[in-house]
Image 1: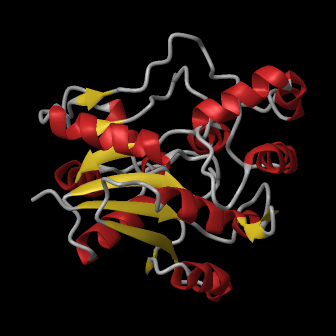
Image 2: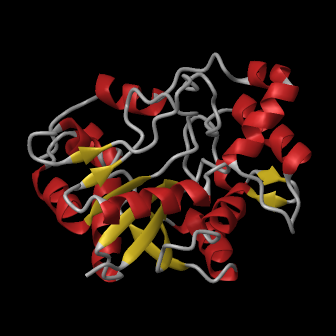
Image 3: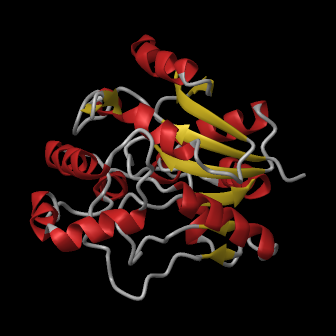
Length: 256
């Protein structure tokens, strides 16, 4: 009962940066880099890319299959439904949520989260948190299939279904929530996710400095780079964190 499945959500229809999962970073699509970094995790049993049923997602299917990754096609806007059905299809006991717009996702952090989850067996959910001190785009979320199923069954708000886990981490009286990644220094203004052109420019600069096919670079390596070249932080650090979720809340409604 400990099958750990990473589910990477990906789609072509980003509103702020359309087709961002295919944007080139050092000669490879961004999604390829996300998959490549997740594949370096040593604690997971399976990796799945969860996309939508729309025809425009074909390039995502092609990249996933070329890298040997399983694919699930589901609901476009109800990403919670997509996750739940992917978890059912691939018999997941523990789900690791990763998004395809985080090409600096760190497999060491993924493995640390998984170790923490199994060491502290009373947790339903682990995440960096809405008010995290961590760089935006470095972490992941780990949660049980039972927690996912309850969220899928009980979530009624659009924001909860579009963003998968809000129902879980908003209800700490129902779920036991853990936050294992707590840096001593506030790094929350560091923006390592890709939603806009400036985000992409930042990530490309990081890869230009650190990427080597035969030498994985970690979160620590990125932080060391930013100490040497603090001007890189100025590329995109004024963009609002969690802007997509904030937008969902403004447009929130109950889904029948």
